[in-house]
Image (tube, rainbow, N blue to C red; front, side, top):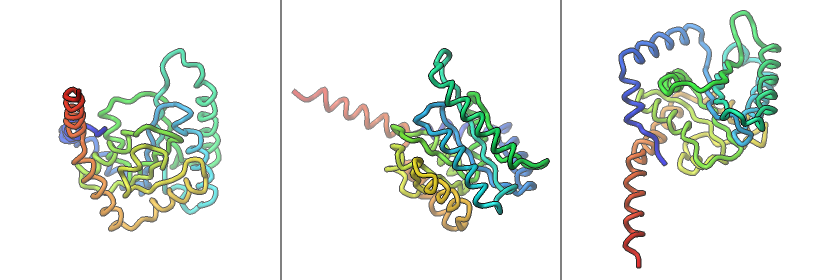
Length: 237
C-alpha cells in the first residue's frame, strides 16, 4: 500500500505550515542538533523499549554525540481499556526517564517523548524537521510511517535518511534505506551511526531513489491495481 503523497504535499504548501517549518528549522540550525524521529503505536511488536534502550547504549558508547543529537519519540497510546500494554508503557517511561536523567544538561535533553496521538499536520512537521527517521518494529506488515517520512523529504527536496527494520514489510520495497535488525542492539547502534556520519552526497542519492519509488507506487497506484485484480477475479469461472 502506498501513501497519499498529494495530501502530504497539500499540508506542506499551506502557508501557516510553511512558516512554522521555516521558523523551527532556523531554531534547529542555531542549535546544531541532529534530530532523529521515531513514530509508532505503543505495542510490543513495534519495539519501542528496544529502541530506547539502544539509544541509551549509543550515548554511552559514543559520548562525542552527546549534546549533538536528540531522539523525538512519538508513541500513540493504545485504545482505552487495553491494560495489556500498561507494563510496556511503564517500562518505556522508566527507560526514557533514566536516559534523560543520566545525560540531560541545562541546554539539551536526549529524548523528547510524546505519549499521545498527534494531528497528521503536526506529524508532517516533525518529519520535515528530522534529519533521520529511526523506524524499528520487531515485526510489521508494512509501515506507512517510513513512507510518509520519505514522501515529506522528497517533496521538500531534502535528504532525510531512513533507518528501517528489516522485519518491516516496507523494507523489501525500500532498498536504499539503512536496514537494521531490531533484535540486535549492535545492529541498531551501527545503523544509527551510519546514518549520522553519512556523507551528504550519499544521503541525497538514497533519498532521491526512495522518493522515486514512493512517488510512483502511491495510494492511487495501489487503488487502481487492487480494482484491476478484483475485476480479473470476477471474470474467472
